Image (cartoon, rainbow, N blue to C red; front, side):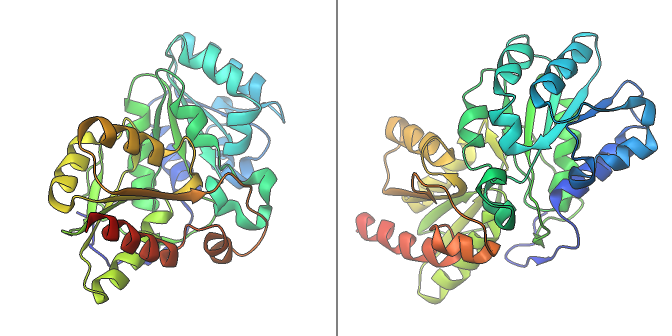
Amino acid sequence: MPREMNPSKAEKPTRQAFSERMVEYGSIDAEFMVMEADIGGSTFTNKWGAAFPERYFNMGIAEGNMVSAAAGMAADGRTVVASSYGVFLTMRAVESVRTMVCYPNLNVKFLSSHGGVTAAIDGVTHQATEDIGMVTTLPNMQVQQPCDTVSARKLLDLALTTPGPVFTRLMRDPLFEVYSEDTEFRMGGSHVLRQGSDITIATYGDIVFQALEAAAELDKQGVSAEVIDMYCVKPFDTEALVKSLSKTGALLVAENHQRRNGLGYELAAFCLREMPVPFDNLGLRDTFAESGNYYKVLEKYGISANWIVTTAQEVLAKKG
């Protein structure tokens, strides 16, 4: 189960843990293929290439062609991972993702690295801050993001055993570990990492750790915040959300993405239909970020623990 509020320092990034688990899985499924868009050293798919060279294809800097080729192999009955940075998978290749993979509902799994501003020092060209909005809009696509190495490995298994296209959003750098090896994950699931009664903080990926830090600070201020890791962004866990909001009656969503068309918009629309509560969401405010220290970028663009604390208090003021 999750180690509530007690993250430990991570030694490797989620992109590495995901790819290393792929190598292990290669011995389980002899038909499993991996395709790469010339950045195997960064996504760590080169580890797969070393172990299974006959099942590894570097398609060069041609993401659309890579996805189309992956679709062809998947149409022949194989499960295929197509790997690149998120900004390229969802910008350069989105037409192929939509028409070649999602439309026929094929078993292509996307290893999408450098999600959000976790690629902080690489700058705007490598920061995928619109990707969630793009892939969650595609019919048949399911979307998930691990926050640590345990969840990265588990979500690789989940992606490979879930029919149809699955997009897994991964991070550039190691942050923290929060899950234990016996934690179970499911498509459409989530985990409550901290119980609370005053406000629900829903988040995913790297912002899980900002939310936990914020919840600890809010506790000092007399506010009991419940933190949910919505590791499955699409479909999101409606049951867990309703259960939490039935307790807290207030919702704050924090995500490393544009505020527009992210998880916050989805949860806001759900709450308007099903159970209106005081609400706000944190993310990039219709702006690009910039190159710089990861934590300073989070602070400047409004998705740090400090911003979560301040905004949570504002939401609670609406609650009265």
